[in-house]
Image (tube, rainbow, N blue to C red; front, side):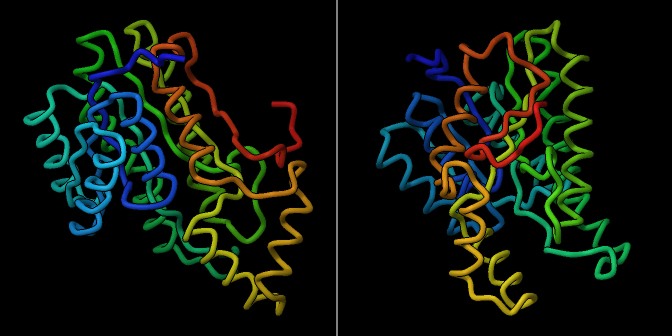
Length: 263
């Protein structure tokens, strides 16, 4: 299927590894001109070079911390200078630390809000006006299945990502008439460094081994396995495409059937 986005310009945040990297690569495979960022300049450049080598697409890696106003604005400005107006925005950021109510202080909530909500809102504020003027745009937020079914021990993620989902749904209705869509992809358990870190933390807290926890988790998933980042990236690319032109305000879980809800 031709997704109809060849030569479009995309920004992909936090894309030096994991799901962000896979999303950037999937868009590049579709002929999109991709600008990705990471807080580590060397990792951003290395990721861009690898994707460009594998796909033949134009891919640029930039150092930017999406929790910083000035760095985010510089990233968008550089993209517009080198690539033109931004057509596709994929928001992404590393998750907040595992925590319970007893563990979390107010500063942890503030940091989580900056990381997982304001980072996306900040980017959207910079690119949405131009998308509306040109009457074409795609925003895809990478969130988590925790927005559909809260995960015990991940209080901060459950709280902040749900808030971002409410923002995305509201924004989607405000700008739909301008042919700008806003959707979210909610990954289930996925084989990433982030998941490794969470599993290690839970192993220490419960006294179980990582292997035992991974087996228990797989048993909860109807497909009996975790996802690989490429499976999440495929959903991101579809929602960013011309083919998804009548889909907006949706949170698409990619979770192997883990969420039991009908909605």
